[in-house]
Length: 264
Length: 264
DNA sequence: TAGTGGTCTAGACCACTTC
DNA sequence: AAGTGGTCTAGACCACTAA
Image (cartoon, rainbow over all chains, first blue to last red):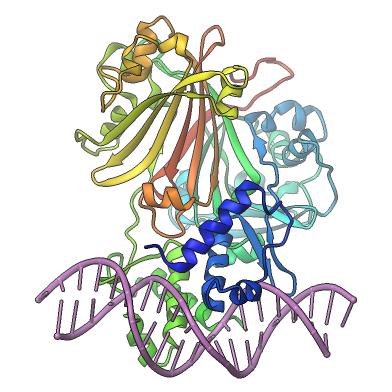
């Protein structure tokens, strides 16, 4: 026998999926269900909390509990890094991407801070630096309108970026073409990348910073960017609200028997 | 002022991160903290539940609450699809991958069912089939030892697989070389793929099936596999326990100005 | 001010595990 | 039987929102 709160949550979840409660619509108030004999207030509350953790509803004091709108996933393909955009044009990769998905660009949707810090172990490893080496950390919080969507922190080696716009702590994107353009102008043209992704529960800090609904996971993206000669010029860590993004990769099926290097 | 349960959870989380409680070690029992004045039983329980949702601990009746072991992420690169493995050798892609990561292979770690079903909308779209068309669905639940790690359901067009081993509902991998080998033998050599990933909270069904700790998210992987001529021969949906996997992709930075097709 | 969800308590009882 | 976490109640009170 499942707990009472679980049964209530399942019943409501089914009604939501059936469409009895449309997105944006209110669920019955907690006290109504209590009066209707669904259980004590704590029990009904537990059911609502479970629905929230499963991503179906959001509750807020004073308002009530409403069925969550499904925001369309923003698909991120490698085309967002297209050199033509930032080398030949003015666009910054992340903005170009947003324009492509039909959402307008507004100013002040990105805040950033640039600091010189001792490289965290993972960063040092990615850059091939010894423990304790210093790097520049460029941390951005990217929003879509009022809603934060992800953070992105890029780590650069000082000798690559010192004296460039990248270490200028002015808010906003790093000028025309963004960070890759700055590296390009400094003689470091990016050539290939490695992206590594995994998902996990959000920490309390991330819940606050990204304004995540309770229970929404995050996706961490670790991106290593190389020049043609294999030098790492950027290592970046992104933390994304999971409900807003999907990643897409196209590749040829590798065949080590005839093509030693595979898909590099 | 944060709620009492949140403050308690934060305090315990910090102690866990500091190492005061090592992985595998027990946290104080709920009743101990109640006696110590941390709050009522419900309050302490709420704190423990939050820690569980954040992936830090797991609780179980009769035992107690212990700090979660961090299982190393299994890194999935595209090398797991290497043709040499399944075309020239005997390995099945997913097994080869496991061997490569140093974990032994045991029999009966995969269960499967094959059924002929009306294609769900997404599947029909991927295969370019009209609504209502039928496909073969080959559903597997993959385990590592006793622990389920992910489900993987492949959808095939009947004309590609009818009469092959793939529609034989015998448990276990589809014989030597696995599914791609069967398609290869039937004249459909796979050539390139598209993988699409996103994360979300687990549904109650998935929590049960994959034996997920409370709060652990899942990663959905949608894989479309093409022949050289562009025919879709497999569309697969995987649901992965997030704490067990990371995905890695290497690619060249695209340059539409000089190379029209990018990295396909 | 009235109504919403959220927190907290004290205590009873249940489900599961170990001895 | 004893000890663990989990559920449930009844009721008080708090925090936030809207009219």
